[in-house]
Image (cartoon, rainbow, N blue to C red; front, side):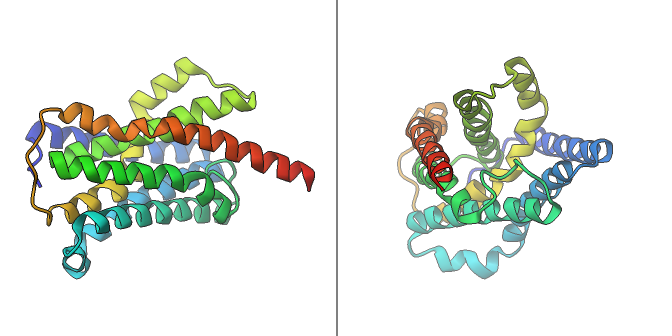
Length: 240
């Protein structure tokens, strides 16, 4: 993997520290199950990535034979693990409205099409560009802004009629949420990049920015899927 530029590395570290400070401050001031769920889930996501990093000698060489395929599988598995972690903590604390659904299988049905598509596209572009770890973490936060922020925070509420405060959403997303979301997506993109490093690098294209944004294009078909799936769940629930 390419080494992260020093300035970019400092930016990511400072951003993550800021995110953790704000999570703790919110929990101390709010003291609700939801605030504690966010604190434990997001920090737990980052800790899971650290555990994968510390244990790399145990599992990484086993994925070297088919790096691109295994990178896709690993990223998708980690996405499912993080979803299950969020849901388990939410239900254990009696919180509501944080995971996509209160049932694990329904939660995965609603979210995994996005994660799988995002991971596959990311693996393809990472194999081509070999982004540095700091860049990968920033891209992961950006992908989560698209999925949980735009689709989950703006489009779905608008379709359901609840709406959202757009100016407030923008301010919170830029100043706080983006940096917290880096931790959530870290295990989906960074370990996959470690696996991809076993693959001989192809010729680098001169479109790194466009390539880095390509997973966000998957949001278009995924949004259609999510709306249809939520409508189906609503009508099934009403019929029952």
